[in-house]
Length: 490
Image (cartoon, rainbow, N blue to C red):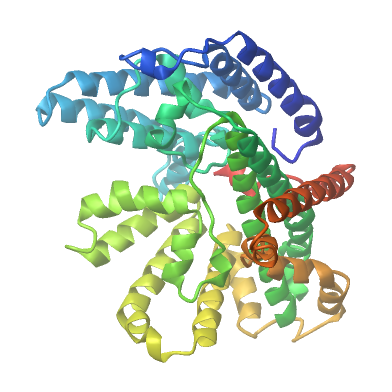
């Protein structure tokens, strides 16, 4: 099940909100401060409802793997308690951490990489059986959350969770379960048992959800059709140079609005429930360097690798080149068990090292437009590597991308893709920029002395836009055949 599904929008979500609201009527009104141990929850029944619906949400596509996730949470729960009970700095504490991390790595290794490793061994002449194990949805996201939980407990930046059900709630919470953002335990630890939801939270959450739904359905799904038309195995043999660029630019917009739209919806639902997830995107396509791009794109993943891999390896202090290569090799591999993802990660490792050495020190002397153009060309080229898991198709694409296309420079398909979708391209470029911040600042500038007037204008505009986005999204979803989230396979 995905958020942009009619069943989710009109059956699952309303049923959840109704049960969640009814559970709140019976919940205790005691505050967390009345319980020095921090074990008493002010939302025990609401938390139960959230866990039950989260497990139902996950089981909708693959019921068997619910037990895998429940077992994973049990292992991390016990490992967290084990770490806490060992003396600080002792061998037992490190052994407890390593044991918990090993189980997590083995789990993701078996389900995500075992088949890939077996195929590579067979390719070099070592005959081994190739397992055909289905990839559990969202395993990369909830495994990384488990790893961050154990490391934070080990570092004493977070307290170990004493109740298994509360840790299960953190890992399985359906708003961020399938495709992130990767939520640190420290971000939501206090809110698991003690959270308040104001009218402003609900209003902001609903509006954020509608923005994400619009990004996904109105923009990402349409660009998916354009990208597939040019970049599929049927379209590549006769592709033109223009077709290669239009196709990969369509995918560039598709993956951004798909993933950032999902993050918006996850953050919005979380806000309605009283959880404040960190931002995951900050308009990455306005960047003037690849370094800046990766500070703005999938920020929860970037901060994870920075805090749990790059800095522990030495960061900028020692072996920086090796550290960057290690981080980006793992970043590529995290996205999937395929050589194109490894190539994609190493491509950006090289670009970032070259950029740090030759471009960033001279950035003040380079026109901003040139920097932006350079950064976007590198990013778009990277998406070309990311898109093709078939290396032969990737080779054909880059031949056309670099000007050596079998179909020449341009054809009618290119003209039609631009002309018939003109407003789609305009909207994509517009909403890749921080237009929301600009639009919401206008009423306050016009009515600087009338704060209430500006607030009413903003609220009315949000409500109207939310209704329009919902109606347009539902209209497009009825009969839609293309509605999958890209990142559910990671």
